[in-house]
Image: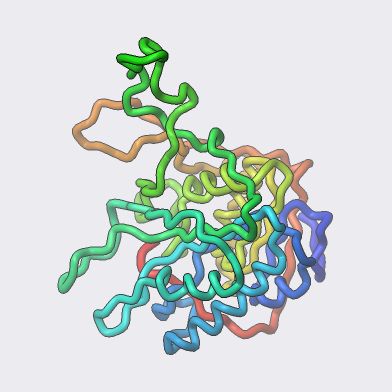
Length: 317
């Protein structure tokens, strides 16, 4: 592990302990291919201060503006959010954040619904079981590798029954488009990837975005890195990763997870594992073990000891 006190574009993984705005101001224009993150949800989690919604949006605007600046013209921004809850009333954050992106000229390509089966149980409303990924592009000329993220056809042997293609397979042999509703388990108590972070990304959620929206060698940036899931998903697919996190304990966990990955010891839930069905008889897919080539992936750690904690969080990722 190499140490440095400044931003180094020669490293393939940058973990920055401090406010993401400080790191962003050191990054050059048009540098990263993908910005993907789950910002704080303004719920008063340990890593954020609860703010008035107007102040929260102003804080988010600063990060979004800088993120757009460092994004390549063919790049994408994926902002994964849930609901802000105020005295029992919910405010969907994707609705109130959309105007910030639109005002910067970004174009919304998908509003992806991430559905999961477990979470907090509500008593005065229906329990929340989904969150949203807003996928924006900077221009109309953007990277989108659909073949890299196709999923199995529901009826793989289905054929045309009439017309000039009669008898031929009607579906793409590589699989189908996964659509804009993704059923991926969230990281809860028995999840193989669980750490002490209360709102942790599953690796497979970020894998799909990395594979679809970047190419090998591209930079992937997470301004609210948490325990390093974005970095893991990027590095395991030969991308380069940058992340910022204000909580020292989360940075330490991220570093340890990357060390485990370099040593072939990190276990994750594989993308091809189906969602558990207690009555199903489908194939059993064991956890995937990640083994990064540490000789090719020098890890750059950056530390900042004085910083102001920005707002961040979520209700149930």
